[in-house]
Image (cartoon, rainbow, N blue to C red; front, side, top):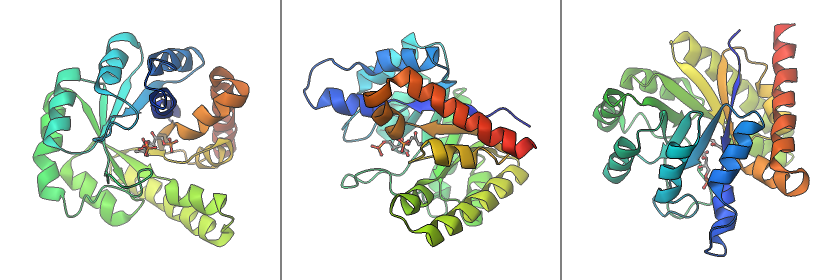
Length: 250
Ligand SMILES: CC(=O)[C@@H](O)[C@H](O)COP(=O)(O)O
Ligand SMILES: NCC(=O)COP(=O)(O)O
Protein backbone atom coordinates (compact mmCIF):
# COMPACT_ATOMS: atom_id res chain seq x y z
CA UNK A 1 0.00 0.00 0.00
CA UNK A 2 1.32 3.45 -0.94
CA UNK A 3 2.06 5.77 1.99
CA UNK A 4 -0.46 8.55 2.54
CA UNK A 5 1.10 12.01 2.36
CA UNK A 6 -0.19 15.05 4.22
CA UNK A 7 -0.13 18.39 2.40
CA UNK A 8 -0.76 21.25 4.81
CA UNK A 9 -2.63 24.20 3.32
CA UNK A 10 -1.54 27.49 4.92
CA UNK A 11 -4.03 29.82 3.15
CA UNK A 12 -5.82 30.81 6.29
CA UNK A 13 -2.67 31.90 8.08
CA UNK A 14 -2.65 34.55 5.35
CA UNK A 15 -6.35 35.26 5.99
CA UNK A 16 -5.51 36.21 9.58
CA UNK A 17 -2.48 38.23 8.49
CA UNK A 18 -4.50 40.14 5.90
CA UNK A 19 -7.11 41.08 8.49
CA UNK A 20 -4.62 43.67 9.77
CA UNK A 21 -2.61 44.29 6.60
CA UNK A 22 0.74 43.72 8.33
CA UNK A 23 3.32 40.93 8.10
CA UNK A 24 2.02 38.71 10.94
CA UNK A 25 1.26 35.82 11.14
CA UNK A 26 3.69 34.84 8.40
CA UNK A 27 2.51 31.95 6.15
CA UNK A 28 6.14 31.01 5.42
CA UNK A 29 6.83 30.56 9.14
CA UNK A 30 3.71 28.40 9.38
CA UNK A 31 4.88 26.33 6.39
CA UNK A 32 8.31 25.73 7.95
CA UNK A 33 6.73 24.77 11.26
CA UNK A 34 4.29 22.44 9.48
CA UNK A 35 7.18 20.68 7.75
CA UNK A 36 9.10 20.31 11.03
CA UNK A 37 5.95 18.79 12.53
CA UNK A 38 5.58 16.20 9.78
CA UNK A 39 3.88 17.74 6.74
CA UNK A 40 5.00 16.09 3.50
CA UNK A 41 4.31 19.22 1.50
CA UNK A 42 2.73 22.66 1.57
CA UNK A 43 -0.37 23.70 -0.33
CA UNK A 44 -1.30 27.31 -1.02
CA UNK A 45 -4.07 28.77 -3.18
CA UNK A 46 -3.29 32.04 -4.96
CA UNK A 47 -6.84 33.20 -5.54
CA UNK A 48 -7.53 35.65 -8.34
CA UNK A 49 -8.89 38.14 -5.77
CA UNK A 50 -5.80 37.58 -3.54
CA UNK A 51 -8.03 37.32 -0.48
CA UNK A 52 -5.42 35.29 1.43
CA UNK A 53 -2.19 34.13 -0.23
CA UNK A 54 -0.34 36.86 -2.15
CA UNK A 55 2.07 36.55 -5.07
CA UNK A 56 5.04 37.26 -2.77
CA UNK A 57 3.95 34.41 -0.44
CA UNK A 58 4.06 31.94 -3.31
CA UNK A 59 7.55 33.09 -4.33
CA UNK A 60 8.78 32.92 -0.72
CA UNK A 61 7.33 29.44 -0.22
CA UNK A 62 9.03 28.17 -3.36
CA UNK A 63 12.34 29.75 -2.33
CA UNK A 64 12.44 28.73 1.32
CA UNK A 65 10.68 25.43 1.93
CA UNK A 66 12.43 22.14 1.40
CA UNK A 67 9.33 20.02 0.69
CA UNK A 68 7.05 19.99 -2.37
CA UNK A 69 4.94 23.09 -2.95
CA UNK A 70 1.46 22.47 -4.34
CA UNK A 71 0.24 25.69 -6.01
CA UNK A 72 -3.55 25.83 -6.28
CA UNK A 73 -4.84 28.19 -8.92
CA UNK A 74 -7.58 28.92 -11.42
CA UNK A 75 -6.86 27.92 -15.03
CA UNK A 76 -6.29 31.46 -16.30
CA UNK A 77 -3.55 32.94 -18.46
CA UNK A 78 -2.34 35.17 -15.62
CA UNK A 79 -2.03 32.24 -13.23
CA UNK A 80 -0.29 30.15 -15.85
CA UNK A 81 2.37 32.86 -16.25
CA UNK A 82 2.91 33.02 -12.49
CA UNK A 83 3.16 29.24 -12.16
CA UNK A 84 5.64 28.99 -15.02
CA UNK A 85 7.78 31.64 -13.32
CA UNK A 86 7.63 30.11 -9.84
CA UNK A 87 7.87 26.50 -11.03
CA UNK A 88 6.33 24.79 -7.99
CA UNK A 89 6.54 21.03 -7.62
CA UNK A 90 2.83 20.77 -8.43
CA UNK A 91 -0.09 22.82 -9.69
CA UNK A 92 -3.64 21.91 -8.74
CA UNK A 93 -6.20 23.55 -11.02
CA UNK A 94 -9.31 24.58 -9.13
CA UNK A 95 -12.54 26.39 -10.06
CA UNK A 96 -13.02 29.89 -8.69
CA UNK A 97 -15.93 32.21 -8.21
CA UNK A 98 -15.30 35.68 -6.82
CA UNK A 99 -18.44 35.60 -4.72
CA UNK A 100 -17.91 32.17 -3.15
CA UNK A 101 -16.85 31.83 0.46
CA UNK A 102 -14.72 28.81 -0.41
CA UNK A 103 -14.17 26.44 -3.36
CA UNK A 104 -17.70 25.19 -3.82
CA UNK A 105 -17.31 22.34 -6.25
CA UNK A 106 -14.94 20.61 -8.62
CA UNK A 107 -13.51 21.98 -11.84
CA UNK A 108 -15.88 21.51 -14.78
CA UNK A 109 -13.42 19.30 -16.65
CA UNK A 110 -16.07 18.10 -19.09
CA UNK A 111 -17.01 21.51 -20.52
CA UNK A 112 -13.46 22.87 -20.24
CA UNK A 113 -11.84 19.76 -21.72
CA UNK A 114 -10.50 21.32 -24.92
CA UNK A 115 -9.26 24.42 -23.09
CA UNK A 116 -7.53 22.34 -20.42
CA UNK A 117 -5.64 19.95 -22.72
CA UNK A 118 -3.01 22.52 -23.88
CA UNK A 119 -3.08 24.28 -20.48
CA UNK A 120 -2.16 21.09 -18.63
CA UNK A 121 0.34 20.18 -21.32
CA UNK A 122 2.20 23.47 -20.94
CA UNK A 123 2.53 22.97 -17.19
CA UNK A 124 3.73 19.40 -17.68
CA UNK A 125 6.30 20.50 -20.25
CA UNK A 126 7.67 22.89 -17.60
CA UNK A 127 8.22 19.88 -15.32
CA UNK A 128 5.27 20.67 -13.04
CA UNK A 129 3.09 17.83 -11.76
CA UNK A 130 -0.50 18.66 -12.57
CA UNK A 131 -3.55 17.83 -10.56
CA UNK A 132 -7.21 18.63 -11.28
CA UNK A 133 -9.53 19.37 -8.35
CA UNK A 134 -12.71 17.57 -9.37
CA UNK A 135 -16.00 16.16 -8.17
CA UNK A 136 -15.89 12.48 -7.18
CA UNK A 137 -17.74 11.36 -10.31
CA UNK A 138 -16.89 8.89 -13.05
CA UNK A 139 -17.59 11.55 -15.69
CA UNK A 140 -15.09 14.00 -14.18
CA UNK A 141 -12.48 11.28 -13.70
CA UNK A 142 -12.80 10.12 -17.31
CA UNK A 143 -12.41 13.72 -18.49
CA UNK A 144 -9.34 14.26 -16.26
CA UNK A 145 -7.75 11.10 -17.64
CA UNK A 146 -8.45 12.20 -21.20
CA UNK A 147 -6.92 15.64 -20.45
CA UNK A 148 -3.86 13.60 -19.39
CA UNK A 149 -3.59 15.00 -15.94
CA UNK A 150 -1.44 12.56 -13.93
CA UNK A 151 -3.23 13.42 -10.67
CA UNK A 152 -6.76 14.19 -9.52
CA UNK A 153 -7.77 15.67 -6.18
CA UNK A 154 -11.28 14.66 -5.22
CA UNK A 155 -13.39 17.35 -3.53
CA UNK A 156 -14.42 16.07 -0.10
CA UNK A 157 -16.43 19.20 0.76
CA UNK A 158 -19.92 17.78 0.21
CA UNK A 159 -19.18 14.84 2.50
CA UNK A 160 -17.62 16.99 5.24
CA UNK A 161 -20.41 19.56 5.01
CA UNK A 162 -23.09 16.86 5.35
CA UNK A 163 -21.39 15.63 8.54
CA UNK A 164 -21.06 19.15 9.94
CA UNK A 165 -24.73 19.86 9.35
CA UNK A 166 -25.86 16.55 10.85
CA UNK A 167 -27.22 15.11 7.59
CA UNK A 168 -26.11 11.53 8.27
CA UNK A 169 -27.89 10.03 5.29
CA UNK A 170 -26.31 12.43 2.84
CA UNK A 171 -22.92 11.99 4.55
CA UNK A 172 -23.01 8.23 4.00
CA UNK A 173 -24.06 8.70 0.38
CA UNK A 174 -21.23 11.17 -0.22
CA UNK A 175 -18.73 8.89 1.50
CA UNK A 176 -19.77 5.96 -0.68
CA UNK A 177 -19.47 8.21 -3.74
CA UNK A 178 -15.94 9.18 -2.71
CA UNK A 179 -14.93 5.57 -2.14
CA UNK A 180 -16.20 4.56 -5.56
CA UNK A 181 -14.45 7.51 -7.22
CA UNK A 182 -11.13 6.79 -5.49
CA UNK A 183 -11.14 3.22 -6.79
CA UNK A 184 -12.28 4.28 -10.25
CA UNK A 185 -9.61 6.98 -10.59
CA UNK A 186 -6.83 4.66 -9.40
CA UNK A 187 -7.98 1.98 -11.86
CA UNK A 188 -7.71 4.59 -14.64
CA UNK A 189 -4.03 5.01 -13.67
CA UNK A 190 -4.44 8.38 -11.93
CA UNK A 191 -2.70 9.31 -8.69
CA UNK A 192 -5.52 10.11 -6.29
CA UNK A 193 -5.56 12.94 -3.74
CA UNK A 194 -8.45 14.25 -1.67
CA UNK A 195 -9.22 17.39 0.26
CA UNK A 196 -11.51 20.17 1.41
CA UNK A 197 -13.09 20.51 4.82
CA UNK A 198 -11.35 17.48 6.33
CA UNK A 199 -10.85 17.18 10.11
CA UNK A 200 -9.29 14.44 12.28
CA UNK A 201 -12.29 12.19 12.02
CA UNK A 202 -12.94 12.51 8.29
CA UNK A 203 -9.21 12.24 7.54
CA UNK A 204 -9.07 9.01 9.57
CA UNK A 205 -12.05 7.57 7.70
CA UNK A 206 -10.91 8.47 4.22
CA UNK A 207 -7.34 7.31 4.93
CA UNK A 208 -8.71 3.77 4.90
CA UNK A 209 -8.87 3.81 1.09
CA UNK A 210 -5.53 2.26 0.17
CA UNK A 211 -5.40 3.90 -3.28
CA UNK A 212 -5.24 7.41 -1.80
CA UNK A 213 -1.80 9.00 -2.07
CA UNK A 214 -2.32 12.44 -0.49
CA UNK A 215 -4.67 14.50 1.64
CA UNK A 216 -4.58 18.30 1.55
CA UNK A 217 -5.86 19.89 4.73
CA UNK A 218 -5.84 23.53 5.79
CA UNK A 219 -8.76 25.35 7.36
CA UNK A 220 -9.28 22.83 10.16
CA UNK A 221 -5.58 22.68 11.05
CA UNK A 222 -5.20 26.45 11.19
CA UNK A 223 -8.30 26.57 13.43
CA UNK A 224 -6.94 23.85 15.71
CA UNK A 225 -3.62 25.69 15.88
CA UNK A 226 -5.37 28.48 17.81
CA UNK A 227 -6.09 26.03 20.62
CA UNK A 228 -3.25 23.50 20.62
CA UNK A 229 -0.60 24.95 18.30
CA UNK A 230 0.12 24.03 14.69
CA UNK A 231 2.74 21.31 15.37
CA UNK A 232 0.44 19.45 17.76
CA UNK A 233 -2.51 19.76 15.34
CA UNK A 234 -0.36 18.27 12.58
CA UNK A 235 0.87 15.46 14.82
CA UNK A 236 -2.71 14.60 15.74
CA UNK A 237 -3.73 14.71 12.09
CA UNK A 238 -0.89 12.37 11.13
CA UNK A 239 -1.90 10.03 13.93
CA UNK A 240 -5.53 10.02 12.72
CA UNK A 241 -4.37 9.24 9.17
CA UNK A 242 -2.16 6.40 10.43
CA UNK A 243 -5.02 4.88 12.41
CA UNK A 244 -7.21 5.03 9.29
CA UNK A 245 -4.52 3.44 7.15
CA UNK A 246 -3.84 0.69 9.67
CA UNK A 247 -7.54 -0.14 9.63
CA UNK A 248 -7.39 -0.49 5.88
CA UNK A 249 -4.42 -2.83 6.06
CA UNK A 250 -5.94 -5.15 8.66
C1 LIG B 1 -9.10 24.16 -3.43
C2 LIG B 1 -9.43 24.02 -2.01
O1 LIG B 1 -10.25 23.26 -1.63
C3 LIG B 1 -8.76 24.84 -0.97
O2 LIG B 1 -7.46 25.16 -1.23
C4 LIG B 1 -9.47 26.06 -0.78
O3 LIG B 1 -9.60 26.70 -2.01
C5 LIG B 1 -8.76 26.97 0.22
O4 LIG B 1 -9.05 28.27 -0.05
P1 LIG B 1 -10.47 28.88 0.29
O5 LIG B 1 -10.74 28.59 1.73
O6 LIG B 1 -10.28 30.30 -0.03
O7 LIG B 1 -11.46 28.22 -0.59
N1 LIG C 1 -7.39 21.26 -1.75
C1 LIG C 1 -7.92 21.27 -0.45
C2 LIG C 1 -7.04 22.03 0.46
O1 LIG C 1 -5.96 22.39 0.12
C3 LIG C 1 -7.47 22.30 1.86
O2 LIG C 1 -8.81 22.60 1.98
P1 LIG C 1 -9.34 23.00 3.45
O3 LIG C 1 -8.86 21.95 4.42
O4 LIG C 1 -8.74 24.34 3.77
O5 LIG C 1 -10.82 23.02 3.31
